[in-house]
Image (cartoon, rainbow over all chains, first blue to last red; front, top):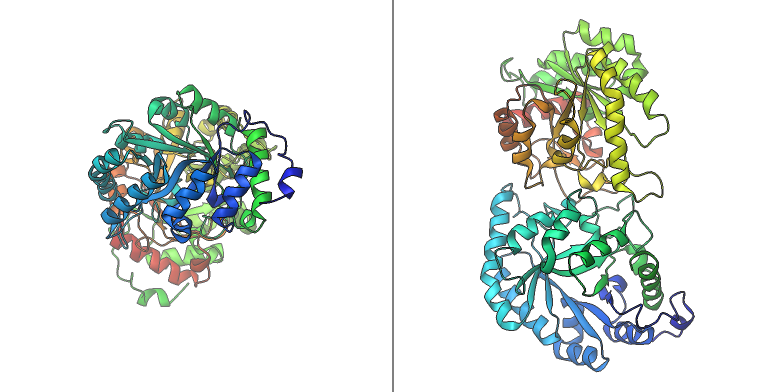
Length: 282
Length: 282
């Protein structure tokens, strides 16, 4: 637990101001889970977004107890999906169980890219829809919502063939909105001139709202070039107002993948995330 | 002029096979214009896509004469646009005149990103539409079509706020299709699940069709990571068939920005471009 936190820029934030704030643990990639949890408690943060790998490392049951004992709400688990992998079914069924064990209401799905050497984008997209159809009854039974995350089109080849909110909704709308929803991640959708119309369309299907910021130049591989809220060019407040207007009142996760942010101490990153959230999102 | 060309994989291509082929000079960035022109003639390539900078370096009138004397058709001039720059009006008027001098029927517009520190994407998009409205009469008078190029959404912040074919058409449709059209560049639009519907919508507004291929990982800055046709995951033939079905019968430009391709000798690159075109596009 960081003492530095209490003198950070975000110190003194009221519980009401942070009511919807959730810290996605990937934002402080190198902060061990017990420290993230302690840091969140110290900062008055009510929610945490978890990832399967660090949870597995700490132990699933231990992680669930750690977070529960700390009084934190698990807002989402990242991630299922990658439906182009051979073992997608077994892996996603495990992910659903893990989400249920952790008390995560939403399992974020990153749907996977094209198969190696493949060019059949339509086929890959059909497989995503089919896979979600197979998983939906298991998710419903476990009380976990499948949250389809459209990724930025720059990831369409290798990470996620679902490249827009409209596309994610085209799939989600085939299911009960309490079973299959969509993730609105500002980083992935901000460029889209139809995003506000699609957010309105999404309504109760908005399963999660994530924020970080867009900065250039993008780094090699483009994965780790995100910025803390307010450090880039996304109108985060407008997007937050739009999801609110669509009826979403759930958590707002700060989730930043950034080599630069990851190099900073976890408590400092959490403090900066809170500051960015208060200044640029709510 | 390269003798190597005659022994390249593309040697022996018939005039009919290459009827629509155009070599965008940016594909062999370091090949001086006279050599590009000689290389195209030697390979039986009928069309060339030019860029303003190398044309200016060789001299506008000299370049026009060089290409004309060689019997090549200038298929497009890159590029106008960048409407966020202070001098956009004067610069684009010059670009229109240059296109007219070169006999380029299409002036490709890359519309520019957000102003420094800006977050107002809608405002930037309105400025693009307004600027095109101002330029259209000048373009019409010069017999040059303004060809709005939607760029991949990964360039929305810093290069082009027009990020989809639908968006480009929303602007183009305000004008006579002989005065304002759109560029369909496979690299920028392949990921879009609405692209085939939008190509059909575009019809006579398709001013240019450009091809290259998508490979990962993307390099730092993401500009120079493209591949020659066939070396990546884009279904180029399907896109070519779609523009044809929409009524487009014009040139097909191979345009590749790639540090790796640029390091190769120009004649070898042209040969590889022709080979990729014949195997994967037509």
